[in-house]
Image (cartoon, rainbow, N blue to C red):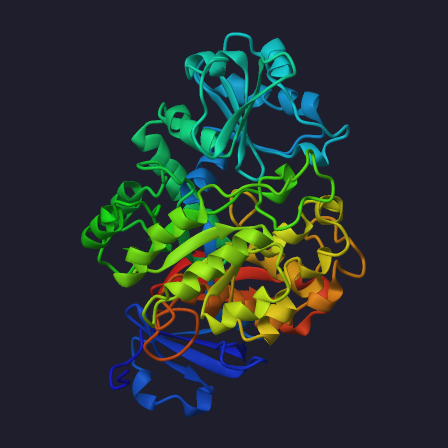
Length: 542
């Protein structure tokens, strides 16, 4: 990158973390247009970068680092559930969750859907799967749809079932279910692919302008938390239902309002034209499509993650979860995409799903510099950990998932399999690349909380368990920050453009104070975002 022209601005600090070293050092970064012109010791900066109009900002002892990049979130749902159009909560129990609908019911039109996200039956007291009866008692004539915290299950009332045309004779789509009680009556619980299929019909009542407002608000929320880029990955595994809304992103970009770098990953289908269409329509540096997404299984807490041996608390003989599609079907989807140079990201949580996913990626690698990616990877067969690095497959993981269900891994998988749960230290030591994200709206997008959990193996809210869960799998602060920057850039297929402070990289930067490298691991959450720069422009200032 030429340095003959003056920089637009120069950011100075005693703590510059470029991502190349394990510790920050005094230095500065020079920005010109949307790129980094220079980064390093201030005294070594070329004098030509300091012009009469160059703005110099001294951030003192605050940490200057690459902007956080969320490697895995669902933008549509994240924006929706943080907007006035819906609500987001866990609830203390089934009755409390129903009661928390009241504010939403009061502000939404009388005949509109009441939509929420966040309930987790295994965290309730008493625990237990809810039913439509409690919703019917409170809202007998108004449709209610409550999406679970893991985004895999819908809890509906009778009015919602009727509006959606679901009866006791309805057949659920492959990979999903309409739960029934012992008498064959619908309970109101709809799982996996069946829930995914219904969501577009539920959210169809929201206007384009309402959704644009939600998108604007969410990108501000991202910038406030130091996030400069995201991978918006498909939440659906069906044609036309991926919820990657390039039309909304495109409207913000055209209006000059897009302040987050977005990499889109639509659903991988036999018809691969969706990705080609997105890539043709969006060619700018802020909005682009980078690859495909597919689903191989569900989630462990509901026994829909695909595991090799039966769940420890099996609900029936041979309870190993299930693949969403057969391995041969998944391979038939991946092979032509890889041949065309398109990387694929596959949701695989259970150890058997991960194992089969690696089989497929090893047989059908994608040409460098692209990378295939596995999403979530919660429970490994031991020999598969080293296979990730050998196959150049990225581990896209969400640190806050580790503590979402205290005791859940022990309950569902037993003590023999627990040591291979979210093995971040072992993965890094094997040479694998970690990419950090949040799976928002499953967990909040705050990267500092996720970094805290990765470094301490403790929950960001409760700070439990005190010594850390599987503490031998803790990683260092520098490793966690690299996973949230350079690692996520690799998952976005943009590692040559993002994730480090180096000449030629996009000028996506976050400033943290106090400097987390000066804090004890248990105090990392004291670090606050002071400023966020996207494409060289200040998108947020505290």
